[in-house]
Length: 256
Image (cartoon, rainbow, N blue to C red; front, side, top):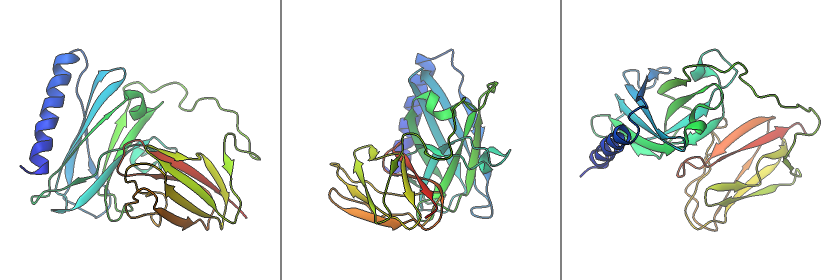
């Protein structure tokens, strides 16, 4: 049996379980829209069912993808860069397991997550990327709450001199330890010109990728292996491990 057929069976079982265990919770369906010219004929939908306050199931069913191609998909919290959720440049909040389209260009992915992590305070969106170039975003789906809160952003004191709870790094270099499902330290603040080295100190394979900075893309890192990248420009960048959902962190790069 192919991976897609097995996953279809798992999806059907999961949604059936949701119907039996959470009859009062509707199944929400969000259509994907094409982004740019990549996979212009692609389409699909995101199905979200909340089973309990601590568990939801999100299912991607996609068509018109490049056949036999690896893809990744991410939930992003709603950003503020645009009124269009898919262009709002929000941070990654959850990562779907990597998947591969079949010979007909169909793709399927399933993610179990805490419902609060999906919508945040205002909403979210899901981007689908080709695995070999996360800057290519063929499809996006907006996921907005039925009732938007009065205050989109929580009241948080802002400081411009010393960001709270960050770990500053010297310009010579800094090491980030990759544990199993965590990056340490995080959040991290470094000066432009700093080389960051990620070292896998866990027991399973991880990797390091970023949508904000496509240049950050490691190979699979087995325990004890490392990957380095030198940050040259200021900004706030999110990176993640594509193998493990929810495993992400941020680096703030300041001027020299």
